[in-house]
Image 1 (cartoon, rainbow, N blue to C red):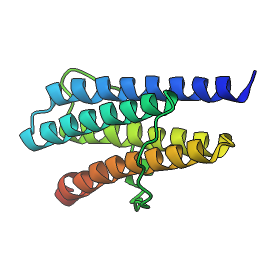
Image 2: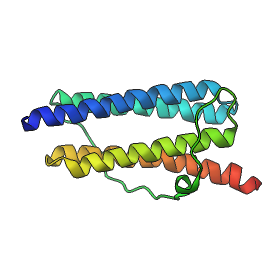
Image 3: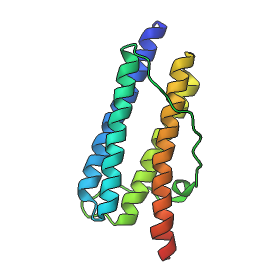
Image 4: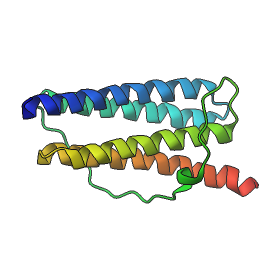
Length: 151
């Protein structure tokens, strides 16, 4: 298998991951009772759609502009219990599920960045990993402000 086919397969996998993330946040937003969090979830769905577009553009050979910021990690998701989505999820559970999902996406893109040899693909996956880290940070801050302050 040649280098182009492998990169195309990786990009296809990442595109599928972004589609899944978009669907996840859209469905979660429909269940959210807190209007502010519903807006955040819909915003993340839009960002995941944007990630998909970036990946599709890269696959088509287009040049894309990438960020290079490093996002802090509060590590709250590391200690939260895994949650399965249900119809009547509590706000805390929605936040936990979202943190775990973003942590997994961050790990995926970090691993992909380490796997590929192509410098542009490496930069792309590092950038996407940092964007997922921003999402996780947003959920961790919300969890810290709402859930941990209540306990």
